[in-house]
Length: 303
Image (cartoon, rainbow, N blue to C red; front, top):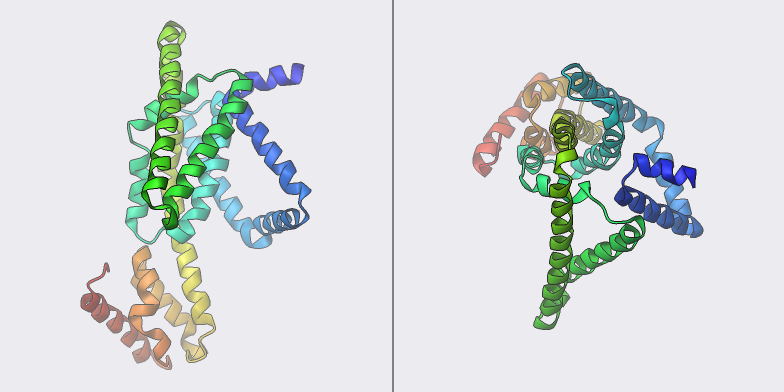
C-alpha cells in the first residue's frame, strides 16, 4: 500500500493507468511464444553494438540540453520524471521514425510547428487534472479503442460507403463528447485551484516537452544526415565498377558536394547516374557532379 502511495506522489493517475495497461500488454505479449521471440529479437537489435553509438550520442546530446537549461535556471530536479518520459516517448521514437520519413526540411519545420501550437496548452490542462485511478484505467482503453476503430474505418477504402461513414461520424461524436467533458472537467479544476498554483512551475511543466523537442531537432537532423550518407556509401560499397583507388576520393567529394543537405544526399545516386557509369579516373568523378546539376535543372527538383 505504501508503495502505491509513493508511486502516486511521483506519477499522476493517468500515467499510472497507462503504465498499468502497458504492463498488461507486455504480460500478454510475453505469454505468446512467437511474440516473445520477436520482442527478444527487437531488444537484442536495439541494444546491439551497431546501436551503441546512437544511444551514447543521443544521451550525450540530451544531457547537454538539460545542462544548458539547468545553467539558465529553467531545468530543475523535479522535472526529471517529465524529462525521462519525454526521452522515451519522444526522443527515441522521433529518432527512429525520422529515418524513414525525413526527406527534406519540411519534416523538421513540422516538428517545430507542432511544438508551438496553442493546442499544447489545452493538452497540458487536460493532463494536469486526472480522474480517479480506477476511472483512468477504464477511460484509457475506451478512448484508445474508439480512436483505433475510427482510424481503421477511415483508412480502409472498402469501408468508404454511406453506412460506414455514418459509423465514423458516430465515433467522431462520441470521442468529441468525451474530449469536451475531460477538457471541461480539467478547466473547472484548474480555475478552482488557481490560488494554489505556482505559475512559474506550471509554465515550466507546460513548456518543457516543447523546448526539449525543438532543441532536439538539430540532433535528429544530423542523425538523419548521417544515416542517409551511410545508406549511399553502403550502396556504392558493393558497386564493382568503382576503382578502389578512387573510392575514398569519391566518398570525400560526395560529402563536399552535398555537405549538410539531406535532399542532395538522397538524390545523389539517381541524379548523378553513378550506377550507370564506371569510375576509373578523376574525370569520371567530375562527370557525376555535372550529371547531378544537369538533372536537377531538367527534373526541376530541390538542389
